[in-house]
Length: 332
Image (cartoon, rainbow, N blue to C red; front, top):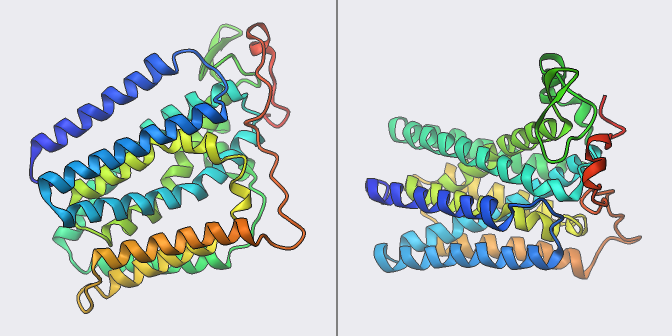
């Protein structure tokens, strides 16, 4: 499938049309995304992914369709951890609920470009040097182990290198100006805190891509399947964020499930020349581990319960006149 230029052109054209409709029609006016709206959009994006998967099954066969579904599930699962980090970023910078969708839209658009470049580079490297697959597998193994042993720590964006560089090289203002990333202050053009949040969201996805893209290459070496499964999963990340941001802290055992998935696909990658694990087995293992960790988190939470983090998505929307005066206390 990766050899057909028309498949690439057609898929990317469809994605651009969907993004244009999303921002230009359905979310043209800034507003806080309700749980009902998030649920509806999540259903839409998942349905589109499954419809696309059915098309792959019909035109290309069972095996590519199973590979797409497995890659899509892996990406969706890893995105949950990403959601938690984004929620903390929004909370830290007190981003008004009405403007979070705009940040996520442009953040995901940037993520699509970055991941497309990563996938192209990964496919080329694996095609030229087969031994690199063992490096990818080792990265996934170490990441999975590190994730399982990692203690939950508070995230301080002020120590992030992106924030430090932005504060050093960009003219920044302390105030929000509606949903604008740039504004004019004292006669000069300056970046708003919303632009700083966007940079952090992009950096967060860059970090998560280091795990997710090698993980999908462990499932298939078809660049088209790797790319489309990544893109279809990312397109639904915004709605999934608004759907899960308030409850993701309850999935206390999910990180162990994700770590097991990364260890599994890493081991599969490193043993690919010796043991061939069928895609059906990979799909069953990943679905069972992720589903089991979520179910266990909900059915048997730790003693004492789980305290929800102070998320920012429930902040009241500022009045239009007050947008320019909204100042996050933590932005210097």
